[in-house]
Image 1 (cartoon, rainbow, N blue to C red):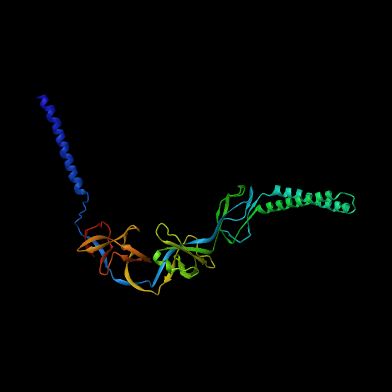
Image 2: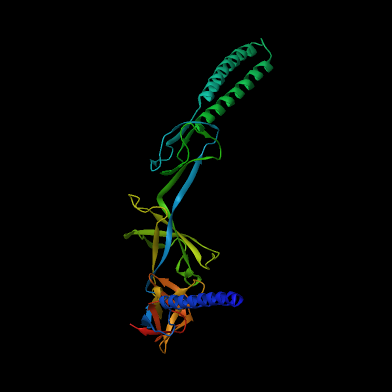
Length: 349
């Protein structure tokens, strides 16, 4: 009898556990949301119509400084004084950093004493040589010694001059990389000077639109932060090699406003107008999904959303010109992409 109980009790416990687990599974399954793929998804759509394109369009780009450099010392020395700080407006030739030159000045005094003595020797030997009191070779040696001393003096003056680091052009101090008491050496950056009175503006354009730009041609440019301020930019560079995105860089030179409103790193647009208007397919950019290399849209057909590949010709602000993949009369999804998938049932709001 005991042997039978030993067998029945474990089996009963196992059965109870299995029943409990199955019951818990049913409870959890009932609480978890089960998405019904057959359920229709509410979407907003737009019917494709041909529109005139090419009348006016813009390319986005970035402003960069025309001049920017990091200054370093040409000779070694301890930094005695940093005369500017970040944000200081400087002019060409203005003193920015002063290195210790006390030892060089002492050497200069020694060189000047040597020059003075050699000049006296040359005068004395000149008088004696004219009177045939000394040989001419002694006068020549004195003259050569004087020339050497003058070169040494000029070298020391140039070294002393280089202990004062000056601004190479008008600009603003945009980085301070050292402090008083630090040691300066050639190649070690100390300050960064940026000139934003003149800016570079660079955009990337497709190969089809590259012909719209000509060197030295003037275009209207504005910064996104100051859309009401129109700037004039001259095309100075048209790229000869495509970048990773198969587009070509076009660069402009732009004069900043008098109060230097436009800063380096700001975004902007170059505006173009075309006399050659043509009809084409334009859709909202928000309707496009997928990657830039394989853009796609959802077409609505017989109550279903079907993914279709498209080819993008160009972008105009918040709209996109499609050259292949859509025709007039197609219905595409423009909103309601949550839970949307290929061949999903949809209802139009």
